[in-house]
Image 1: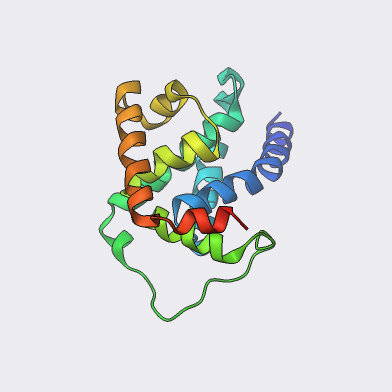
Image 2 (image 1 turned 90 degrees about the vertical axis):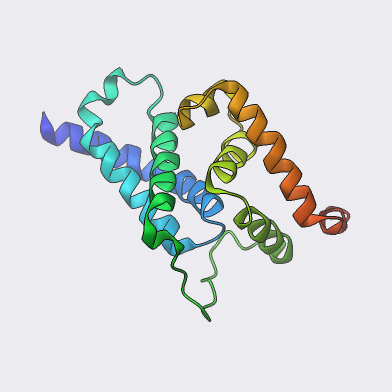
Length: 169
């Protein structure tokens, strides 16, 4: 019984690790090492609850929620403000798009507060509804709408006209 459950979880983890890592990279503004840590922590927490996962309608969405909550918990820790300097990020296989656009967007995302960043990633990257985003963050739908408006406004301020020049390419 336990071996079958473990095998089920391995299949789930193998299928969700990539999407979780991409979301974690966005949440961490491109810090791939922290993103890997967040995915590992998320999968660890999912494994602990995997026996109860049969009662969860959508384990993939639940894993995404666990990832966002893990990220927000990490940001609250005192050590979360420590950043290594003078290190270049490792290149990933996802770098086949325009690197200048990616870096501009990641830099802009890093300027947002962690909860604002989580709202933007869930709403516009994960394409979640307002209600799903509110449930994942344990806030009201009105709070999600407010955070979306403010976060998008901050992104527009930070990006200015530069995003239009990248989109025109």
